[in-house]
Amino acid sequence: MLGIKYLNEAHLKGFERYKYSCVDTSILSVHVMHPFWNWLVQFCPRWIAPNLLTFSGFMLTVITFFLIGYFDFGFTVATITPNPIPGWVWIVAAISIFVAYTLDGIDGKQARRTGTSGPLGELFDHGLDSYSTLLIPVYVFSLFGRFDLPPIRMHFVMLNAYLNFYLSHVEKYITGVMFLPWGYDFLMWGVSLTLGATGIFGPEIWQNTIFGIKPCIIFEITLYVSPMITSHPIIIHNIYKSYRDKTGNMRPFKEAVRPMIPLISLFVVSTIWGLYSRNSIVNLEPRMFIILSGTVFSNINCRVIVAQMTDTRADLWNGLLNLLTAATAVCIFPYTAVGLPELWIEYERNILYALVLVVTIAHLHYGQGVVREMCSHFRIRCFKVRPTMTHATLDTNKNGNHSNHNPAENGHPDRKKRS
Image 1 (tube, rainbow, N blue to C red):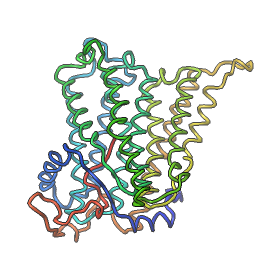
Image 2 (cartoon, rainbow, N blue to C red):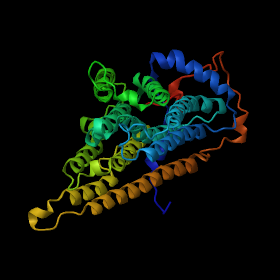
Image 3 (cartoon, helix red, strand yellow):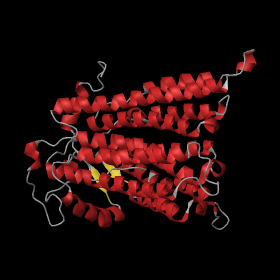
Image 4 (cartoon, rainbow, N blue to C red):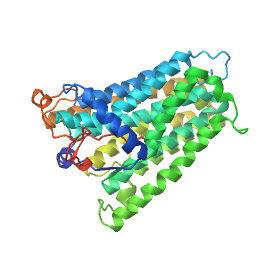
């Protein structure tokens, strides 16, 4: 770990006191998915660690991301006939997403079955979810391509996805409760069915218009409008209620908005680079540009998760933003205006690739460092169930739930929240 420690004593003490508190009222989740997950988890051996289920689902998402990217790295093949992406790729992607969604739903139940519920599970879980927020929307971009959905608009779609995911964690930072949005389950089903239909009928179906409107426009508008109706007003109301009833953490205004500063900074700096790049880098390397902003976002989000779980102060700035800001300054500087030669296109491309590499390594180091420190503190293994726990007996009801189950008492959530 190079001698770097990411958790201080206040963080570790906060994790010791932490209790998971969650509210889930989604009709699809409560009446369809939870009964299905309760039934399915019974077939999962007790020696399988919940975090292993979480990580397996995440890796399916990563593999699918690379698989589609292999055939369509630059989002350029959507309008090519015949489409060079084989139909089986879309079918595999659809199955992978649904399996990852399912593993995401049973890991918390497996934690209670094995007696391994704890703060590490939630942190590990939501941290990987923040990375999935980068990966999953990019699948859909290959359905439309850069000609129907220009890269700069892809960038804004991604910023919207980051915001929707992040606000729920800011909400918990303020209120102390995780309110799971209705849109998560419908989104996962929608993506799975969309990818499956693409595999069966071909991506050409997304080039047809619906009442004269292209599907990409409908997709884009839906992503912007739906959270304004189903998520943002509810978040504002929950925060207001927590202050009115004095049920939340009662943070002063400056502390409550503190987590938003790194996110807004990411949005501003990355957008400036995308709009004013000397070589139009977002059009030159859209996938790498999205990976860069998404990785920085995931790091920002993970640190907020640590802060809200440990009831400590959120970071005002993220160190990775220093690298992004420096790269942006180099790549938007008006060299010709001061008599210097224009920034060579390959220089800017190399800066982007180098930055993606450094930021990714830094983020992965942060993630494994935090997990190692928590495992060391609690004397547990991330991917292993203690032998004494595999035979733990829990009272269960006929649905397979803990008879006294209260989400606030379990550190590993039943299901995770994505935007």
